[in-house]
Every structure is written in structure tokens, then in C-alpha cells.
Length: 165
Image 1 (tube, helix red, strand yellow):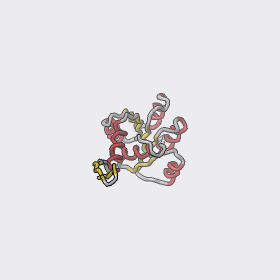
Image 2: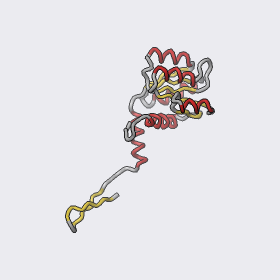
Image 3: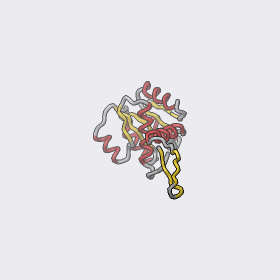
Image 4: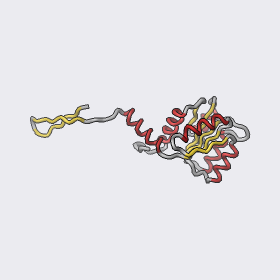
């Protein structure tokens, strides 16, 4: 990019101005956001899913506690007084499903980011998003890259325009 400035009448100067494309700037903010520490409670009744997601997020330097039983996850959240950044939960689980878990957690920490993973979507999940019970829904299978982008975009939704995270 080249920008011309006129310093004196009939005399011009050329200054090179370098700027990254918008996509690269967004990517820089995303990378910076990823590097900042996060604490995550991860709940999925399938152990292999929990382990894979837990390992992928821990590789980013995030603190992740994985659970395969939602009531145990909820008890752990109560013990830490709901002081964590992200709840990442499966939708369909025995005893306490992901949607009910999100409702319980929202009543204790309304600003906590709640992400639902599911093999399907339905009107109940869409309504839960509209009501703010769930912040985002990811369709399984979920890659770490898709998860990170969804978390980043969800985090940006609640910020005043122009805020950089």
C-alpha cells in the first residue's frame, strides 16, 4: 500500500505504509486469545471424547478438568464456586443432560461461557441459545480447531464493539 502526503505546495513525498490484511489481524487476535490461560470444565459421557478434547485443550496450556458423569462435574463446579471460564458439555447424557447442567450452572454464574456439543440440533437447543442458557452449539464430531474458533467468536459476542480480547 502506498500513501502520499503533501508537505509543501508543489512538492510531494511518498511514504510506504505497511498493513496486514483484516483476516491476518483477526488471526493474530485469535492466536493471542488462545495463548491466554483458560479454565475449562469438560463433560461428555464417552470417555474417549473426554480424553481427546481434554488433551487437545491442555496442549494449548489451558487448565482442563474432564468428567464422564455430569453430576460429578456439577459437584466439582460447586466446590470451586463456579470460578472457571468455560463449560463444554455433551447434550445427551444419562441422569443429568447437558442442557439441564447449563441451566444449573447459569443460575450460579451467569457470565460463564457454556458450549454444548451434540450429534443433532433441535428446537429445544435453539430456544436455549435464544434464552442465553447455552452460548453456542457445536455439531459432533468436534475438532479442536472448530472448538477454538467457536469459543473465540462466542467470547467476542459479549464485548463492547471495538474491544480486543
